[in-house]
Image 1 (cartoon, helix red, strand yellow):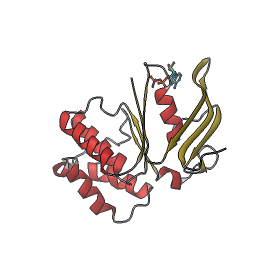
Image 2: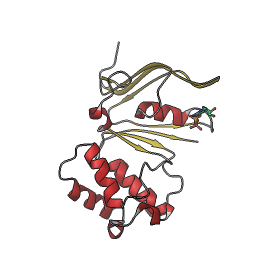
Image 3: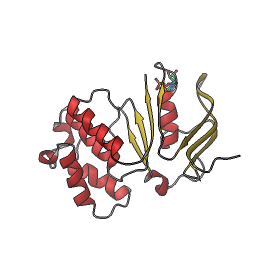
Length: 192
Ligand code: ADP
C-alpha cells in the first residue's frame, strides 16, 4: 500500500555512471514535515540521490514521486516551485548582480511581488547592502548567503540540502537554522 502522507516516495531508485553503481535500488519515504538526515562516506551516492530528486540528474531506473507527482515522467515547473536545493554549487551567475540573479529565479518560479520578497530575504541574510553588486565581486561566504536566499526565494515546502553547513560562517549557520526551524517543511539533508 502506498502511504498517501509521504511527500517524497522513492522506489528501487538506481543510478549507474558507466560501471559505477551510485544508487542501487533505493527505497525511501519521507513524510510531510519530516527532517531526514542521511550520513555516509564520500562516494556513497548522497549527492546523486539529491540530484536525482531535484531533477538535476536522470536516474537509470526506479520511481520518484514528489507530492504525488511522478518526478521523472511528469516533472514540470510546478514541481520545481516546491523544491529548494542548497549544495556546494550556487546556481548563481557571476556576471549578474545579486538582485538580477534572484530576479531571474523569481521569474523562473513565477513569483508575484518578487522585488519585495528579494529585498526582505537579502536583509535577512545580511546582504541588503550588496543588492547591486556583481556576484563575481563577492567573497565565498557572501555568495553562500545569496545561495541561501535563492534556495528560500519561493518558500519551498521541500528542501534538499547537500552538506549545507560546509563553508558557512557561524552567522550564516544561524541563518540557515532559522530558516529550517521557522515553519514545517520537509527536509532531506545529506552529509558525510
Ligand atoms: P557522495 O555525495 O556520497 O560523495 P556521489 O553521489 O557524489 O557520492 O558519488 C557516488 C559515486 O558515483 C562515486 O563513486 C562517484 O565517483 C560516482 N559519480 C558521481 N557523479 C559522477 C559522474 N558525473 N560521472 C561518473 N561518476 C560519478
